[in-house]
Length: 259
Image (cartoon, rainbow, N blue to C red):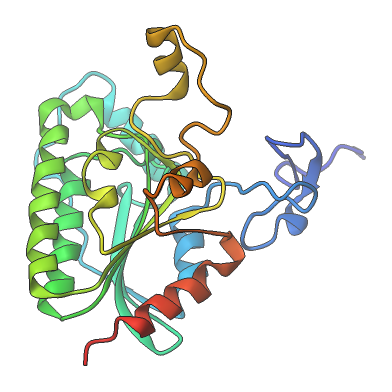
């Protein structure tokens, strides 16, 4: 009989390096020793921020891209996450508040923005406008997906245009920036909402810290691109601890209810 632990029972915390039993991480995936946040999956985010959730019809690719190895990576990501793409949206309720929730998943090819993610984002924004619902986006992304080239970058403008229409219609919009929020996503719609908050410990920026240091040959501050630093410089409305996130979303939705 083996004395080795069952695979997946224990996980080493990336921050404090201590081994933590899966039950100790809890539903919110927080290290009990140092408070480090693991990145949540789509299902975990939905569970955290909703009481009910009805998914929108899923938009899928009609013609696959022919980039070498891309289809294999997509299939692997789908098998790993149990989702078909890096963005999922649906109509949700939380503490009697109805809203349109969209979740980007960093476990699916780092939550990168591509044509399908862009189409699903526009679908979610349009649904919020049509049904006169607040829009809440949980953002986690490494930027544009390189395998789809310029068409990935195009999504930055098309999503922003949809956002403009939603803002003009008077819908309340809330973006929750989580770890990581980088690249073309941070440069476009991540900061386009009425209220932009971040989860404690999130890394938010455009190019990565190491790339900037190698290019500029100058050291950067330890808190560079941190949620706390962005808040201190007036680029965020609030930084919220993960256990307080659902209550914060509820309060903001109540505050901005349509009359």
